[in-house]
Image (tube, rainbow, N blue to C red; front, side, top):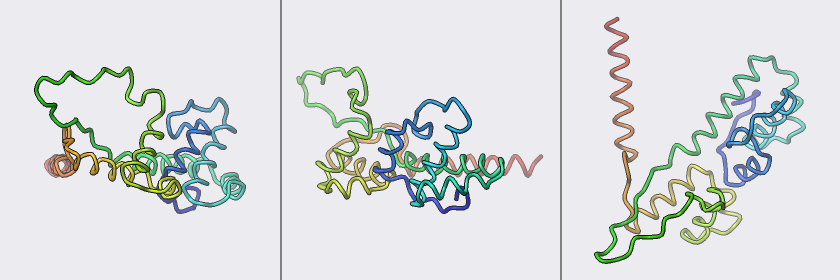
Length: 181
């Protein structure tokens, strides 16, 4: 929760709204004054909680500095969850004697990753525009990754199970170090 409000998942609609607001929570520039920083936090909490912006601002004004900082961390963590389901993929092998694909200057062609993910939901998965915009970003990543995997793409690096095993081994090693200290 943030500012005492339960936070829901970041949806495609919420991501778009944060992009439009140039929010620091999705890669925008850090606000230049404390009031702008508080507005960004209130905007993000409003989007994630579903509570209107004015009510969130009232809550924000009644919080102490510690609660505001902790709420900012909670918003960051919730938004980070939206990208936790991304897995790098590599395209299927190309048939022999086929020219390589053209080299692109960027991953998103200047369209923005939001646009590419949104179009994948519409075209590849057949969602309506309303369904795609309401889809949690973490689910959108998972659905498009699974769709590409079914089309012959493969995981580049570690898949989810391998990441989970590595994380549990690291936690085990850390707890073993603590016990022996």
